[in-house]
Length: 245
Image 1 (tube, one colour):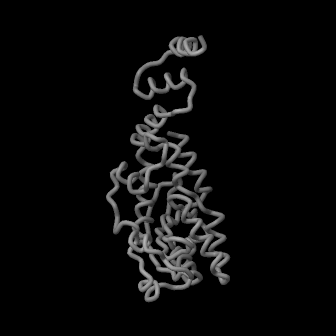
Image 2 (image 1 turned 90 degrees about the vertical axis):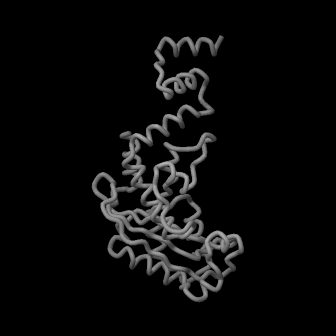
Image 3 (image 1 turned 180 degrees about the horizontal axis):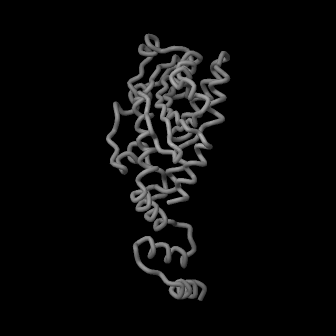
């Protein structure tokens, strides 16, 4: 699976640190109400050497949270009023958590909604921490774009973070939809994807076999090969002949 590792290292762009991020946002304005992060140091092959204890902070939003988000995350207006800090302070605390690694990290999220939350929070806060925001925006990668190239469901859609973790046998950390737990689960998923070649290969073969938009001769060949059957050049030629007759 050389290509998989090459793609992973390309995403890191030479970084020796990853900051796994999860942002929780309001229901309608999509402003940040919580940050979860886990900092990882890497070896030269992109494997995680060490994980720092998770970071979590609550962020006061300008608009209401929304009942759906409150029911999903347990974050209430009262909690933010009591424990939340400004967007500016929260981003500075994230930078402090990462320390000198902040400017050396690739920031990885699961899905692109986290970046929407970051961008929306910037639009609602004129005193935004420009340096911290810019650092994340210019060194950010959506992990779904990597893992989804090799592992999807039977309909061709990426799995949820929880279901990817279940697939790799990763025990769920913490409470569901807690940003620090989700960031830690993402870190474990990243390492499992990097190291478990056999499972990735098995799932990739399923993905190839489920391709819906290949020409019939190629689809027939891929399905046979992905199922462990031999498919010769003469069989391929015969399949193509049947298709054009």
